[in-house]
Structure formats: C-alpha cells, structure tokens
Length: 273
Ligand code: SAM
View 1 (cartoon, rainbow, N blue to C red):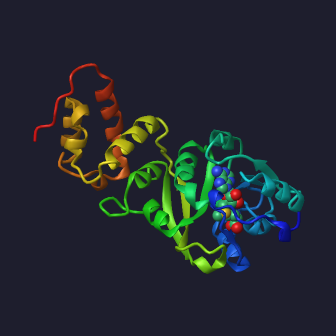
View 2 (view 1 turned 90 degrees about the horizontal axis):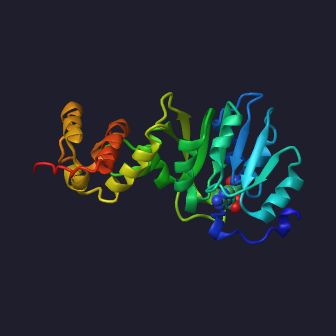
View 3 (view 1 turned 90 degrees about the vertical axis):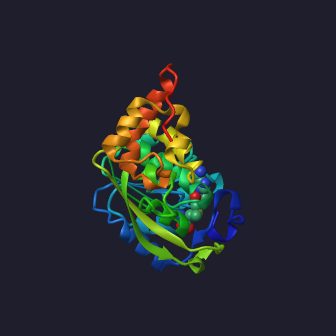
C-alpha cells in the first residue's frame, strides 16, 4: 500500500495526522533522545513522527491499533519493530525490560487521558515520555492544585511523574484539522512513584473528583475515621476544603486511610460539622 491508497482517517481512532515535517522534527528533538537508548512510539499512524524517529541511533519500536496501518508501517519501516496492539489494553509493565526507554506519541485524542493514566502508573524503568494531546488536556496534566484545570488526572499523574508543558501546536499542521489547539507535554519519572498506594489512590481520586465542588468532609462522610481526623490535624487540612485544594502528595497520604476506613467493619465516624 502506498500513501495514496490510505483509507480515510478513522475518527473512532482519533486519527489526526501530522502533515508538517518541521513540527515533526521539533517534537522528536524535544524528546532529547541519546544514542543507543530505546524509543517506543505510541500511535505511529502514517509515520509522520516515525520517519524522524527512524534516524535515531538506537532501537525504535512502535505500537499501533489500526491493522491496515500496521501492515503499511512494517513495509515502510523494516528496521522498526511495529507491535499491533491496543494501548488501552497493553501490558505496560513489560516496558521494564527496556531500561532507559523514552515513549513518544501524538496520542489519539479520544483516549489520551486513560492511556496516560495507565502508562505513567504501570511503565517501569523509563527515562522520559513526550506526548501530544489536546491543549486543554496538557493544561490539566500540568496544572497546580487550587486551579480550575486541576483534577483527578493531574493528581494521579503528579504522583508518578513531573509534568512539563513544552509547546503549543496549532490545528493547521494536521490532516484532518482538529477544531482545537494541541500541545506537547513532557513527563520525567518521580524518584518515588506511588506504586504502593496506586490502588487506594485511584479509588480515592475517583470518589473525590466526581464531586469536586463538595467539601472533603461531606464527600468522605461514609469513610470518616479517627485516623482521618488525625491526618487532617497533622497535615493542616480543614475538612471543609475541596478536592482541588489538595496537592498530589497530600492526596497520596490520605488514600490508604480512606481505604482502611472502608475496609474496617466498624461503623465510620462522621466528621463533625
Ligand atoms: N503519529 C501519527 C501522526 O502524528 O501523524 C498519528 C497520530 S494519530 C493522532 C493517533 C494514532 O494512534 C493513529 O494512528 C491511531 O490509529 C492510533 N491509535 C488510536 N487508538 C489507539 C489505541 N488504543 N492503541 C494504539 N494506537 C491507537
């Protein structure tokens, strides 16, 4: 299949392809790859970034869900290991076999957030991640607590990585053109990722941010315990704060206490109002 015989871009797979080689080079340069280090591209599509990555002096792999594109990519880039897989169901833990790995991708916008949720918490021994996402998502990923953009995704990602907004990408460099701006974000691993607390933290963030306008004490009424009361005191947290006022580290220390409160068969104590 040559590039003229590509089928129409599939909206269901978030296929907005990069069409500006300068932007592609700028994105790959921002990944700061060193010779010899492995790189994995997520969603190579029609190979806009792959073509630049193919010049990298080190192992290059790519993960693509669209089977027709996988066939084309394998023919076009024989040196690159193209894996036919769904990034939402991929065994990200297996990337631990590639120490020093950098992940790069213009992510499918419709599933970028859940994919990032999985990658940051399940990849092991990686060096950096550099992703293009919708600008609004990039702002959420890099938001500070107490801001409007801060949410469950920010708090989750912030417990595994340091996130940085790199640059904005306008719609006209894509085919088809998206309606909104995009942006590049870079993640570097935290030295102390929340692997141990991940399950409790994930559950807590989902509970808290579904009701983000409510106060902590109200949301956690059914989970409240003496341990949480003590935690509030020690951490200087008023139970009237809203979830978005709590930074990622503070939420991490709260998560196991909420899980304990739920697991214990004793009647939970309601917060005093
Ligand atoms: N990298 C190419 C570019 O910049 O032109 C394509 C980017 S396009 C925004 C997203 C790519 O991710 C598409 O090739 C799409 O088929 C692929 N994709 C969509 N959903 C996926 C999934 N769940 N797992 C892996 N790849 C996926």
